[in-house]
Length: 352
Image (cartoon, rainbow, N blue to C red; front, top):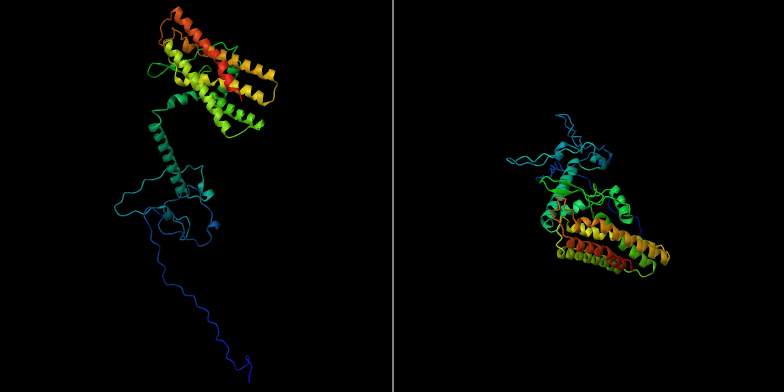
């Protein structure tokens, strides 16, 4: 009796490996309109091939054709065109100093992206001008933000130390329509701007939040509370000045943005006072800084708002007549009231 592993048992059949077969013909993939013809083929890894510059095909010699299988054949950058279809618009060549090929970017694709970006920016500007241009005085905002580094430094010095400044009148030039036009802040130190008030307002809010944080009282609502307080003070002061101008029949060439800018300059002194409080200075130094900031801002407004409240009758651009002694006296008292009210406004703002 033979065992289970006897030699008489049959051995398994030999393994048969499949023989690879290749099709005799591989059809070309179909091309679609507005896309490169066919697909890119490589005889080797594309990373081993040198990347041509952006203007490689624009500077190629006429009649020169790269070898078959090249990854940069010109046919890949030709769009499909049906019979009778108008040829596509020629793209502008890329600047020669920009070589997109160094980053492996298709030059035509890069040019198309740049054109799409320019179109998107132009469409955004057109949308803003149509929808917001009628409500927001964009030209006035551009005028009040037309500042330079030199102007900002000299203006800050004028706000904090206005005592020795001599000329306070604004400069103007004749416009194309023959009317007088104020010079931008970049060219006139006495011209009001909105850059310094906005930056001072933001700095005030951040310093107030920092002081609350040092006192372990910080909360995200602190930012909104101080921003609301600052905007309320600015709007209240603006309304007070406009009401006084209406009651005193003061008509001039001053704009709303001018009055808002003058009202926002107080945040420079307020920020300086809050900064001294953050530095843990003594109460005496803090009070001296507050009183000095109030006096400087009040004197600055007395001299700067004089052309609004008491315009020069010799200035033809203001279109004002001669004032009677009673009218002039009332306007001077109103100007002093605006300057003295800064003590109340700044006292509210520095309470942190």
